[in-house]
Image (cartoon, rainbow, N blue to C red; front, side, top):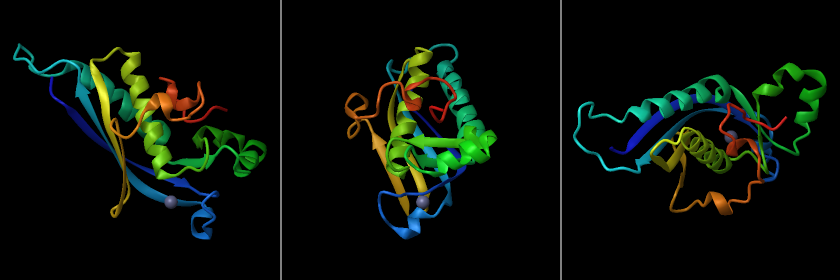
Length: 173
Ligand SMILES: [Zn+2]
């Protein structure tokens, strides 16, 4: 099978508190693109279909998660007091809050995407490995998390957090 690559666009909002930058501390939004690359575990061979059928499976699931759960999510650090606000005053919106261990930076988001996609792939025992996740925050700012510079086993995210789970979750509420 050949390597696979697909891109999806979504809108998001976040705010960064640990960086102590007033500009980033106010909730603000970006229209972002995420591009993922998958490596096949089995080399391409000529056959009848000549296409990677499992590819459609993982692509469909990823697209559904991005479109129905990630798009229009508000990204907040777990310690952000806005979470308590929503819990008390607008609990119906809690499902649209994506939570992060630490600040919801683009780097953290790309790492969470990497783990979530890996969980989807593992859950269906698909013959692919996630090679790279690229998040284009703005046309001039892109973050890349790749297998060469990211080790899930050593990334420090606590066990059981939503990026590890092969469900549609974006938080641990
Ligand atoms: Zn921002």
